[in-house]
Image 1 (cartoon, rainbow, N blue to C red):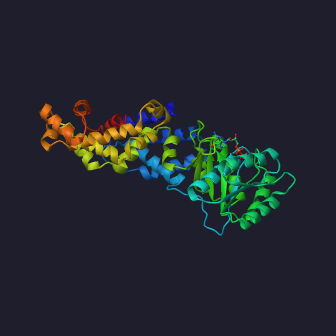
Image 2 (image 1 turned 90 degrees about the horizontal axis):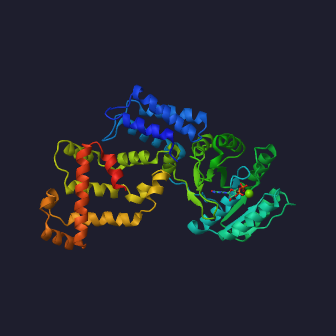
Image 3 (image 1 turned 60 degrees about the horizontal axis):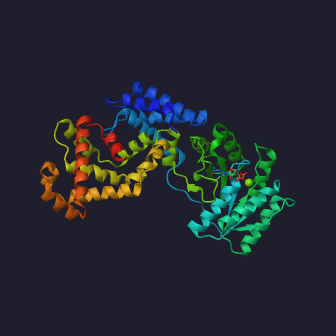
Amino acid sequence: MASALSDKLSRLVKEMRGQARITDANVQDMLREVRMALLEADVALPVVRDFVARVKDKALGQEVIGSLNPGQALVGIVHRELVTTMGEGISDINLATQPPAIILMAGLQGAGKTTTTAKLAKHLIEKRKKKVLTVSGDVYRPAAIEQLKTVTKQAGAEWFPSSPDQKPLDIANAAVDYARKQYFDVLLVDTAGRLAIDEAMMKEIRELHAALKPVETLFVVDAMQGQDAVNTAKAFKDALPLTGIVLTKLDGDSRGGAALSVRQITGAPIKFAGVSEKIDGLEVFDAERHAGRILGMGDIVALVEQVTANVDVAAAQKLAAKVKSGEGFDLNDFLDQIRQMKQMGGLSALMDKMPSQVQAKAGAVDMDKAEKDIRRKEGIICSMTLQERRKPEIIKATRKRRIAAGAGVQVQEVNRLLNEFEQMQGMMKKMKGGGLMKLMKRMGG
Ligand code: GDP
Ligand code: MG
């Protein structure tokens, strides 16, 4: 998913090494690339302009922490601003009302309303233990009513019958009545969409909204819609008080810039992401991960985030200084590195943030196994004396047997760790400090 553009961004990041703070001069090129990356991800132009201006304000004059260079720091700021704009934290469906809680689905035809209705039904049944009813107000397409019936069954929810000769408003009222009498917790109301914004459609859904007074009015939008998503979002926002967004088809190859545009235009939180055609293809929207996708440089962004969030900057600097001064990188430092890996949420969490092509390459690696391996290494080093950790060369056969027994592993495993440590030590010498990122990347696989 990374493009030539983000390669250029990565290169600019590297070029900024050695500069201590973000200035007007060094930030211009970076901001231009950020702007291009956002446009390429199909974020709408006015949204891009606002966004870049906010980032510039936040970035100028900012000190650069730890082992980051200004380029990396700026990417960190861009990433954080993306996350904030798209909404931090998890916002599930709001059900805080007298049951049945009514959820109205709005959006263009083909956006994924019917599919998402069933996905949400399943989510509410499984995760929130609710009794769920669905109903279709799409009287223009008999097949759409049947479609909802089928997917509702797959979701394990109940479907309320409707037919093309009824009025959407009458269908909805009958469904509410039934839901009340049968003590349903939730009623999901699927609606008709048109291929383009259309006054009749807007009028119909406004009337439905007025009659149903839904606790959630969800705008369902196709992530592949790109720039057009802005106009659609505007029209629906003007017609309805939207309470949330579902971004569908994120399993496609769009960079998902629509998320930023739609969020900015509607002000409504992005609650869920559709990630497959299947009934279980719904995920709680993760702004953090999505920010990396939009920039198309998940690795740098995620690592910058992880570094600033979790790494003990002082410890990292101490380590860098140590390596620079030629002092040995010992097993205690190695242990520190291993522990920092763990602190960052482990390998699989880190891998999640990598761009897809990196993930594909790592596909063959079993993450669970790799994490267990890290824990075993930690165990082995912990079974060594302080002296052994400082001077690994004194670890001969007898000591190896003692360490292996202490850690509950085979001697070969101790040997393997010592070999790996030597390699790492060699690499540290070559890097001469400042290479914490590289080191962590290396350790991440
Ligand atoms: P509606 O017209 O808004 O009700 O849209 P539908 O729910 O009928 O979906 C339109 C098409 O998009 C169908 O072929 C769905 O299977 C497909 N679809 C919906 N959501 C997703 C998704 O998250 N990922 C993928 N790949 N396809 C989806
Ligand atoms: Mg439909």
